[in-house]
Image (cartoon, rainbow, N blue to C red; front, top):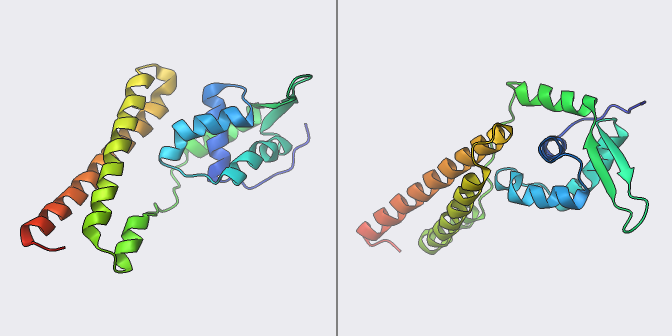
Length: 179
C-alpha cells in the first residue's frame, strides 16, 4: 500500500492505542472507548478525533473497511505499520511538558473567591476518584490491560493528590476565617 507520510499527534496515538486494545472498531466505538479511558487524562476535541481514523488510514497506519449493508459504517483496524509506529512512540523517552488546564484556578486568578470554587472542584475530584477506582477494579489483572491499569493508577493518585491539596487549602482558610 502506498501511504502518505503524516505528522502523528497525541490524538493519532490515542486512536492507535484504542485499536491496539480493542481490535477493529468504528469511529463511534472508538469515541465511546475514549470517553471511558484516555479522556480521563488526555482530552481530545470531538471533531479532531472523528476525523483522525480516516487520516491515519490514508497514511497506511490503519485499514478501512466499509460495511456492505445497513448503516455502512467504516471499520478501522491497525496495520503492521500502525502497530510499529505506536510501539516506537510508546517506547520513546521524549515527552511534551505537562499542562494544567483548570478553569477553577483561572477563576481564582481573575479574583474569584477560592473557597466555593475549590469546594466545588473537590466534589468533582471525589466523584472522578470513585469513577477511576471503579474502572481500575473492572480492569483486573489481565496482562493485556497492563498499560490501562497503570494509567488508571496514576489517575487515582493524581486526583487524590489534588483533592488533598485543595482540602489543605480549604482547612487553612477555615482556620484563619478567610472567605
